[in-house]
Every structure is written in C-alpha cells, then in structure tokens.
Image 1 (cartoon, one colour):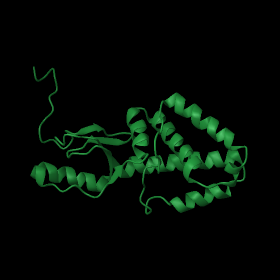
Image 2 (spheres, rainbow, N blue to C red):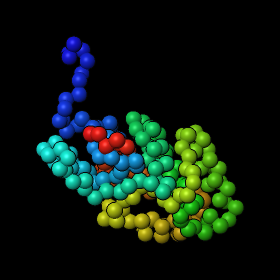
Image 3 (cartoon, rainbow, N blue to C red):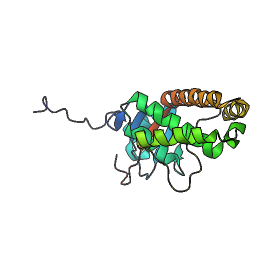
Length: 194
C-alpha cells in the first residue's frame, strides 16, 4: 500500500514545503496568523536547525506580511503554480502602489483615469482586491537587493503615461524576480503545529 500512496516522511526537510517555484511557499512551523517573508539563507538554516532540535530552533528575522501586504501575498499564493498570473498579480500590486504611495506629475492629470481603468480591469480579471487600511502593497525587499529610492525617482521623471506604465512593469518584474530568488514565504499556521 505504501508504494501506491506516497506518505510524507516525518523529519524531512521538505515536509512543510508547499511549492518551490516560482516562489517558495512553506507551512510555518510556528504559530502565526499572517504570511511571513524570510530571506532564503535564513530559512534554509532554520529548517535544518528545526529538524535537529525541533522546538529549540529560533525563528530567524523576518517580515510579517500585514497592513495591506496580506492581500498581495494571498493573491500570489492563489496563483502559486501559474508563473504568468503571479507576475500579473505583482504588476497589479505595483500599479496600486503607484496610485497610493508614489508621486508622479502624470498622476496629477486626467491621465490617471487610464491607470485606474487598468487597475480595475486587472483586479477583476485576477480576483485580487485590497480592503481596509492599506499602508503598503509591495512586498518588502531589503535595500541591498533593490533601491526603492531609484524606483521613486524614475517614476517622478516619466514624461508620459506610456513611459510611466512601462517603468512600473519593468520594476514589478525585477522585484518579482528578486522576491522569487531571495525570499521564502511561510503560510499562516494558527495552531503552530509543525
């Protein structure tokens, strides 16, 4: 019977792995109500320590994804096996961020309507929505990996709507690649059972 049904091996390093690509999602081994974002190197070390010592493994530094970020990561998680959809979700997040957190002279004109139309079209097609008090929608990336200030400056310098949207698309692609390569995402686990 064991040959027909693959049973999960206790103590395996990947027993909590949900997907490894395009983004790595794991079930948290500790109690958390939120998604958690952790550097890949820290996650790998934590997983080894957990297998060696179970409860004695200390949870490394990480980002708790809340205050708007939970909607972004939930959207990415819902398309976790569809790379192109995940990229579209992150592009949508970048466009929402453009409207709520970034400054561009273009957004002070009636051209903002085109951005809103694109955002609503993507939100409805992807079924990804943000609600309540939103402080941030783009997942955190450490400054050594991506310069948020350079991104803001390039948006402020865009000459027309086409250039602005192209900058947002390029930036969202770059951020998505960094997030996929450098971070692991742990899913909520209210009970904290490994």
